[in-house]
Image (cartoon, rainbow over the protein chains, first blue to last red):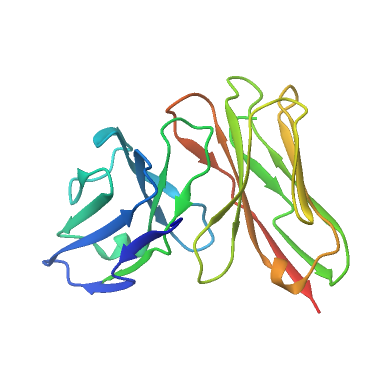
Length: 113
Length: 112
């Protein structure tokens, strides 16, 4: 199984809503990532978990709250988002370290209204 | 070079043509160079992770070379096919457990 599964595929939420994005992998990877991607731009790193501990937070606003309940799951909790947060949110996993390939999910297309 | 730069930004070729594009990255503090292919409506797919200067990797009709001293990598596609149409992204990692720095990608369109 070389899949990273993200749910939901699409999400529309209001600025006062609370929602969560979910990501799951069963490849035994111990590093998991959240990226944000806007049109015609490369993926922008948000968070990295390594061995279930948050190792990188790229100064992401607190309205985005990551969680790694176990080595297979990664969540991104969303609260009080702004319209400019509308983007494709990608999850990825790999072995820790920067010299192994990352496997990406198909992403969640988020629209904040 | 402070960032990862890719050229050209976009490319249109005919089926059967061979093509190549460039990724430039800071030559100091090199750890790894990644190439990904991203097709529309799909997830990015890893092509190569390269770590050694002078390394050359191949996957089918696609190959890549790496020059860490001068800070560039080339991606070659031999005999392009329409299914090769995608955005090709490279990403540089400057050290263990550091983040990937991504280029803006080269968008390839292969016309039948």
